[in-house]
Length: 546
Image (cartoon, rainbow, N blue to C red; front, side, top):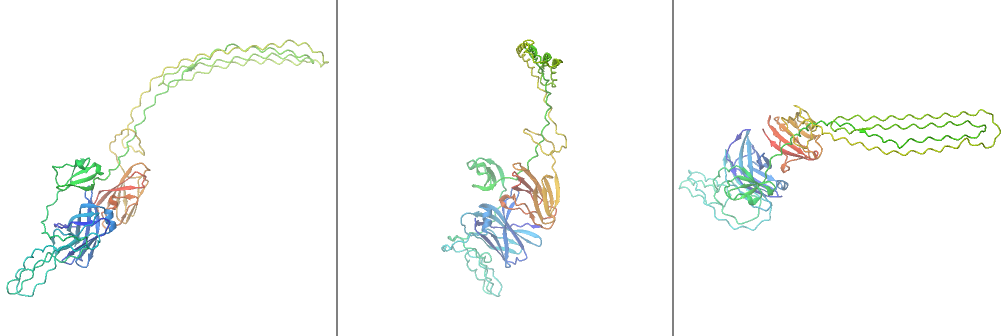
């Protein structure tokens, strides 16, 4: 849309926190075929944030600007914030008024226009900003007499001219009468048409109407000069209007110099940058080989062989039972193989020493033959064939052989070389406790259209969405808490204006959801960040109408 450059009228406006606000603007010509927009500029750097005022056309000559008590509470206490009123006709936009907007937490009175400007066929007059409805104050003292109006020019003989509309100040003196002949046109009193009556503010003595001041020169821009620890550290000399310092103990608020004092202009910070990708972990070095197992030490020699079991004496004949053969000796247990020496660490694992051979099992003595004689009469108890041989004493257990000395500790294996991340590698998860260096990191872009725009955060970190229909966004598959994650959305205008709805979990600055640019081909960029698994998303405006 083309914009007509014109110096606007200046009007400083005040409102009261938590109360309704209304501003009436009267124009001398019909304005019913115009459209108007007005807004407060809450922030201009690094990106502009505005809060719109509700505009309404009353009749054919009046525009009203309003804020509800809820809206003044939402904005909060502000001072020296820019505001503007634009009007549009036949595709051409003009700024009619601008100035400073203030919301105070104490009652204020009326404010009047600082300067008037003629824009084509429109003359702005009788502008009032009002506070909350208050009780009618006592009648103020009568103000001083206004200056005498400019004398009307001598007109030609004719009808008496119409009386000019009453101006803002006290009624000026009647213009001087023209020369004899026709009565000259009576000079217009005051500035313009009678303004709409503002709501009554707290009454005070009516001050003298001051002369309209000349338009001030353009103000200096803001310059961020640096950071100081506290308010006492703000420099007291060498400052210029527009210098800003960020004060650490004031929660990062900026303080701007206005030529005589430092003023709080609110928190100064840009959008949070996206978190860089985690670097890959280096490959683990090769573990050194385990040294060989040393041989087991020799088993000590037993104290002596187990004595032979004595032969069992003969049982008297019944016929006599044949003698039981003697039990063969138990074979000796074979010695345990020696334990191998402890190998040097770092080498290959040594073979396990061989197990000693089992000693052979002694032969079992043969069973004596059963007597073959007939069973005779039981004879007298026969004399035992012989006394049972005494059991041989158990040989004493030999001492345990001494444990062989431990092999010396082998040297540590060589540390493996640091792993190298291959070119164009893809990783699902990378964890490192140290530093990691990367070359070019490439993230994934996904192209979508308006409508139901479901953003799958497992597949991309930049979503390029053409707004060609009413669009509702949803954010799917964020990483779990407390992992920190961010991604980018770029919206592309398609001409018509469509509604755009963000998830309810998105939090915007000042709790104000930004408008999305609808101009065809124009791009808005938004960044979203979470650290609690997507329960809350913090939204930031990176740029608009690009």
